[in-house]
Image (cartoon, rainbow, N blue to C red):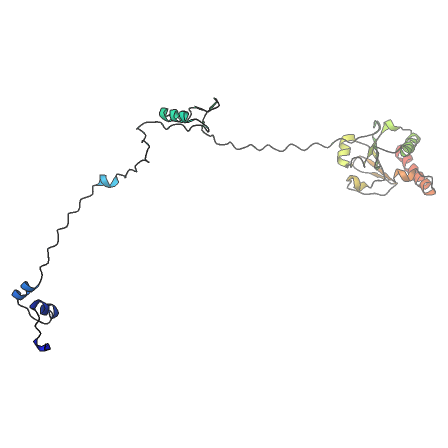
Length: 263
């Protein structure tokens, strides 16, 4: 077969050379397959405002019934209640404060929780006042004797006997003075004067600044200050000894006491 003798049908030529050949209307209508017309589109339904605002209801779970209008929700049954009690509570639709019996027979009221009230903070108690100083003697002549004797309420026996002899030499006794032990309770001069109101204060073994005096003075020197006369002396445990130094200290003390009490 020669390639020059191949004959093509008209519709094949039309498809191959449709952009280059001119086809008559009769040939085109006979060779082309008809195209069916498209179906008309359905008109869109208008959306009303009421339909747009209406929410879509969610169907309840299977096996449950929606609550009727105006029905009160059923009370929550107590822990451990039987199935019959739960069913009865659901049928009655009891309010929240209705009690439901538990298996033991007692009722448990369901009351709304009340907000907790703030706790009031109590004011701290007032500090206790200073305890009065313990004294030995009646303080009839307003003579206060301050000592520093650890381990005893006031003084050991030998020192108390020595002090008693000194007072007798000054025509006084324990009833005329008040002995205060700084080792038992630290002495503050302001509190001491408020309690005893002394006119004479003798310090045995204590510095004036130890009792909060604003002034200082040496031993064996009479020091008037603030309507009171002060006398500082060595500790009593040095004065009770039998040494020559102790005898010298006792003589100096006696000179001061004679001037102080006019003996």
